[in-house]
Length: 596
Image (cartoon, rainbow, N blue to C red):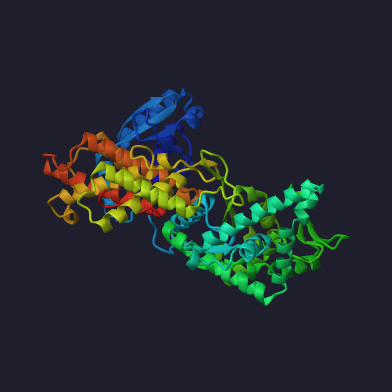
């Protein structure tokens, strides 16, 4: 039942009768009663005081008295400064719980039931280095938003655009060619992406030394950066690559293959996947025809130096180059072509979402504006899922200097910390080695994912591995432990849970009622999270549910409850709580253990 609509439908005729108004249920503004006040839902009375010709407090009392007379579900009310707090009956909440508990996937709409097809891009790594902590936030955010959108009945196509071309890729290639001595992942024992990243760092070290040598000889820093021998060799390699030189292409393919094999391992460990892969080497030319078409339609214009631009100053943006004077593409050129090709390839998609850091906010404003000017109505449905950078207690990360937190090292470290913490508790002595390994991975990865996803994407965040695995805070392991605790109670219950019938004579404890009220909110939480592209809404809701379960369990016996009808009800209540925790955590890509 939609409780708000149910209440609004009862409140509007009472207001009309009392004050001679013509309100409809849609005019009624209700909100959940604040925790410090008694009540379930609150009506703001200020809009009606003119018609009532009395104070806000008296207006609330008049409405409350009529509602309690006419609607048995509304048992009592109180008025605080013009806010009418309404309490719903024990029977009402019990009936609501029966409906909630009857659905294993309460709040989750059937697959593809909305008729909407959405494309969501995330990850977008460069093939010159392994994934790092920043990529971890990107991947977890993109994957969880896709999963949450699926709960709303949307079909979601998850895509990855791999940045596999450009001078930054050549830097790793030239360093390997000069200093690699034919080293391979097999000969070195390194993951392929780690090996290629090693040479990206090596390039930077050599490049800086060469710049310093030139500057010591009297060359300016600006000229030294251009004339450093290794940079000149890299630029020469880029020209050969773009001219399809067979040896350069072969080297590029070999090193890229190493990286892709490494990425595959990292993605699997992280628990993310994609429905389709795009490669910049295949898409970078797509936008040139778009630019030519825009020139013919006078959307773009050619400058004296031969570059092609668009003037977006009327939209509060700047003049933007879409093609260089030498005819080569810029990033926006490729993105224009790729977007248009995607809509041609998937004509049913109604929205395209790009998961990219907030340093690209301006880029996407320009991209969407240009697509709109080119006549694509769907440009209004494109969305930049912008997120803040992840920092460590030590500060920012720099790939070229090798000071990034490697994603694989981070994940392995989290699992190892979970192992140390769990073994120290002494609660897994009866687990097999396989069960232990699976549990350590579940806890470690759950800690990492939850800590990152509980933060609003728009906010910059500080990642603290130690804090993330604390069993007593707003963490993944805290929630996982609550789920495992419920499952332990359910295993010890000696009757068939499937056949439990909830008695109508149950009198709800305050904590039971609070649990039911919070369970009722789950569909709205999923909807809000999907609408705002914010997994933190789900994450913090699930934490509140786990925390409330602990409060309930401290105050209410379950297995030791003497009244068999109450015991059955409480078993069903915690089973439903566990289902929602599991489904909510699944939206974040997090597993919850049965035992812990």
